[in-house]
Image 1 (spheres, rainbow, N blue to C red):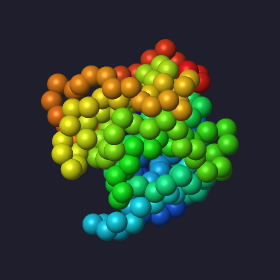
Image 2 (tube, rainbow, N blue to C red; image 1 turned 180 degrees about the vertical axis):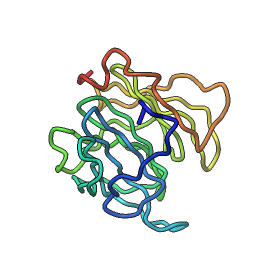
Image 3 (cartoon, rainbow, N blue to C red; image 1 turned 90 degrees about the horizontal axis):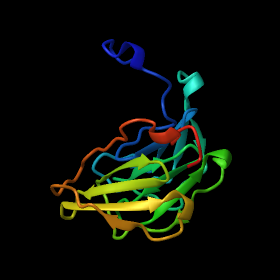
Image 4 (tube, rainbow, N blue to C red; image 1 turned 30 degrees about the vertical axis):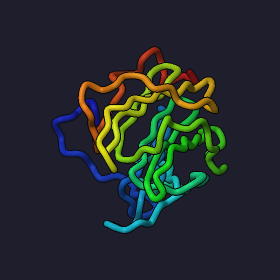
Length: 185
């Protein structure tokens, strides 16, 4: 709770099943968890997408349309209308998979790929663009890819690089830049 961020976090409704190495995206109403693995140390690549309703966050998440292909060590970003899950392992892949929040029971749609196969990396959003940064394996990289939300079938464009090679990293957008969460930009 941002209004009381010194208090201990409260447990809320669970996902539909245990998962790790998954990605997360969302808008002002819902959070989506997608991909990952259900086996610690295993190679179980999940396509499952769970949706958490922020207005009723004590109930169990609902399963929504699956990803096109499973993967663990994925990352996700998005805007108010769509979530984009990218990368993953086994096999390593560069696919970006789009979830349309207005029709979240449909199977995700493959969109323009990253510039290379990536896993164990991070993502963040800015108005009109999603950024995918770093890579963890098989070698740590400083690569930054940018996808254009209005032309999401195009191959991502190399930007950056990061100041240092980073893997297994995290990224965050600084705030709701220009209403990115509240609009479809």
